[in-house]
Image (cartoon, rainbow, N blue to C red; front, side, top):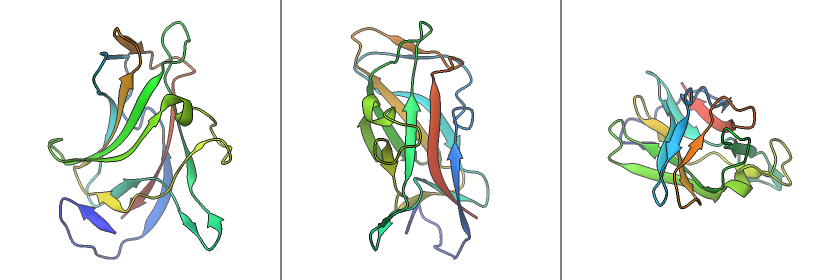
Length: 164
């Protein structure tokens, strides 16, 4: 396991968690411009913790990965399509590591069905204190689109592993 941006690899206890859109600070509509990745939400790693995207893995024929679910909708309740990127970043967002880059159709295939949903195993690099876990969106649209954060169809269920 590598620690993002330095730090000792001391033994820490870990536990799985699933972040939702409010954990990522998505508390207002987000306008995304065409032909560019827009930061939709972020989690800043608290003091004394390290966090990475994903839960579990595949070993000895057993798959313990969890489904990562993201669906963005506009104010007319239409699903927004494009590419979603999961990023680990330093506090200043200078150094970034792309953990996953997938189409919205994959991220929104299923909230819980492991045979249909996008399975996200624990990524081997951890973000340390003050570093960030970021969700970015690159819309298919040729004009700006707005993610309606309080639409019931806008949803984020992101598995992460927390070390402390």
